[in-house]
Length: 240
Image 1 (cartoon, rainbow, N blue to C red):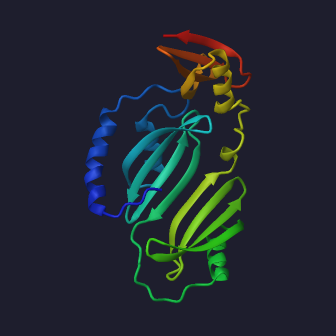
Image 2 (image 1 turned 90 degrees about the horizontal axis):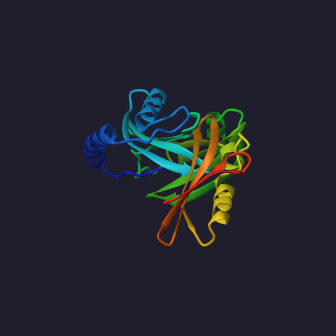
Image 3 (image 1 turned 135 degrees about the vertical axis):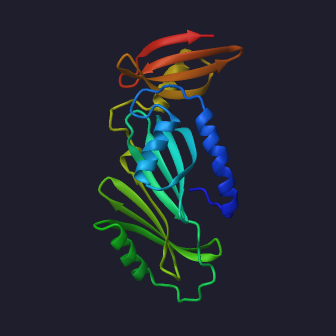
């Protein structure tokens, strides 16, 4: 998550970002989330009474995703949605207001462990690490529960939760739809144009079929190759 040290900078940024959202021209993508605005609406429903500061489109693990940054009170949030079905892949927040002058005794790992298990009921702790960062001692705790992986950071003296994040474990490995994945799709496309360079890979849906569209560049020419998301079959190839 992004760290902001000046609230004034964030406030000034709000007006610029909101204006940008209004004038951004979005490509129509298949699936539940079709624009920056629709991703923004989902995030605002999840984090009520918050303000959106930024919405980014990115590409992760073969999927187009929307990363929505919000501000509420003294916390900055980041939510990541998968475009094709609107699945919330990760959710987290960071506490901006931190007490760096506390003289309390640093809590033990066992106390921190109990706090983490209270926060993630039924979870299993995989690691606890104490470190000095940002002028304070922190405990970073990794927890897993069901299909989610949690990362918690506590103020070692105040026992306050400073960072909270979870992400779907399944998203970090093979996708649940049985797709070949963007790396394999890129490899298949490159095999068609030896010596080319892949500059873009995007999962799309056209006429009910999911496919990876791979854009290649070689010399003065551009190529677009569409690869079936499940079978790896070449569906279409264009040269510009």
